[in-house]
Image 1 (tube, rainbow, N blue to C red):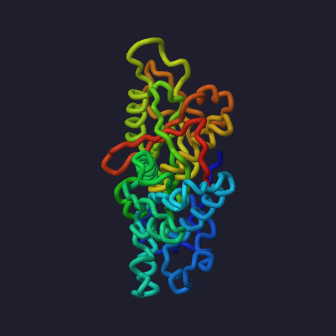
Image 2 (spheres, rainbow, N blue to C red):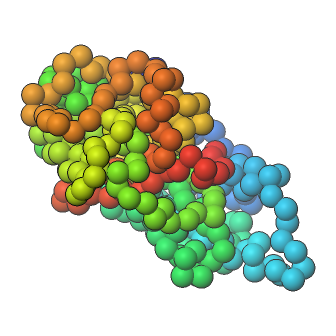
Image 3 (cartoon, rainbow, N blue to C red):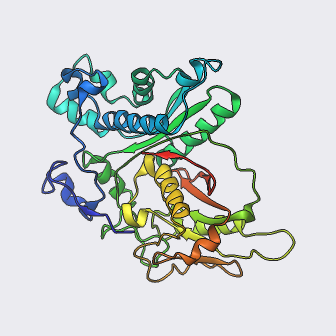
Length: 362
């Protein structure tokens, strides 16, 4: 796993502008070519495409990819199943802070497409409209847990019979410095531009970009907490938040009321040490990391971890933090990997990725 943080690209904003001079570090993880978009492929006019949030554009592209891959791998519905199985697909999108709306107002004025171009509620609806999905269609904004909550809602909708399958997506693009300046004023961002999860020198996180789309027939994991072998942490690299998360995780996953102690240690990991914090997309990014670890039989490392935070005390609980790619640690992954997310008010959320769970990831 590599450190993917880079200086802010020149196509985002002027790093010498007055607003950005107060930012502690000019680094993040950024996606390339985010403004490239083939509008004709999605029957979007050039006039509308100009005002269409690049987050919505990328969601269209990701959904097209995941549906194409899924169609190639699965049989088409039978005649008895009818068209409902092919069209009653739910859409759940984790998304927040539409930066593009500010740019559009400043450069394009008000248009007939202004309202729909950047509205968070339209992000899910546009996918349903474009691809002809007739299942539930919901945009989810619960801050950092948005995409993971969306994935949970997709599962719940399928379990209730609202739809036979669903897509769960998460998207985040950092297009202006305003939110970064706001988060910096709140003391949330690292002064040296690195997210040092679990480390004694942790001082906040660095913002990142990501787009994820998953379609799968998901199933609830009815397992005992002690069956979990690994945890993808929320892990934003804050000196107090990481220890609190660690303590909560070990209390739930490593506390066994009776019987022998857990055979293997709980392996902690965090993709934010490599990608930064992708905020509403972070939950699905963690799921992708968990699936990657299971698929490659390896525990992914936590970058920048040199000295464990003094407030993190495993005690008698078996826990390990990998600082390099560890294939032997696959022994700990025989059962399940858990992904965690935390939101502004402090509410936590967990979702499980199991070794036998097959998902299509774009």
